[in-house]
Structure formats: structure tokens, C-alpha cells
Length: 152
View 1 (cartoon, rainbow, N blue to C red):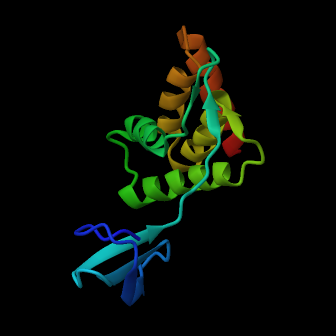
View 2 (tube, rainbow, N blue to C red; view 1 turned 60 degrees about the vertical axis):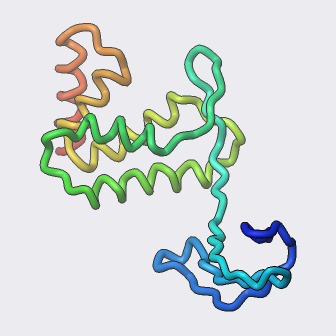
């Protein structure tokens, strides 16, 4: 680890502490050359698949886009921030365990719809209407009937 003050490559670790979530480590270090102290953080780098969009463009998986689209669908709905965070985490976990290096945007949408369906039926219909490009009221009716049929 290079010292931020003198760029020397050797340091002594004075203290290490794990974060509350267990996903990172905070280390207090001392440079062996200039004797200055600094803090470093080590964090697990998650490997998510590359997203292949409908038009064939490949993009990095962005969990913030998932969170944003779910938030829009859940706007003014009685769902807590914690419930949203947990649903987003489940979506991310699903794709961390995804066997392929690439995933179709369609597949991400399906997982998001599954999460929204269990969180809030109205949010599910909102998301489905955009995600599946509803063009008329009949598509809403079909989706709502399917949703009501699943609840029986």
C-alpha cells in the first residue's frame, strides 16, 4: 500500500477493524519511511454480470439503476425504505450468483417484477406497464387479472 504522503510502498498496520456489515476492513497504517499515519479501507469487489440490452449494447450492471426504477414504481406507496433496500439486495444477490458472465436486461426486469409483486401489487403493475411497454388499457386489465389470480 503506497503512502499518500511520500509514496513509499511499505507500511506497518497498527490496527484493523471489521465493519458492522462484515463487508469491509478499516486499517490504520504507519509509513515506514516518513512515519506518517493514514487509514485504508478494504472492501470486497462484487462481480456482477454484464447487462445486454435489447439493442445488443453491453453495459456494466448498475444496482443503482435497479434501485431507482423500483423507487419510481414504489413512489407514494406504503413500503418502507428498509423493505426496498432488502428487495434491491435480493436482486443483487440473485445476479451475484448468476452462472453466466452476461445477463439480458429482460431477465433483470423479471427478477425486479418478482420482488415488486411481493412488495406492493400497485408498484408491480406500474413497473410492468413501463417494462413491458403497455400500449392500451387491455394490457393493464390482463396484468391485474393475472395478479388477482395469483393471490387466490
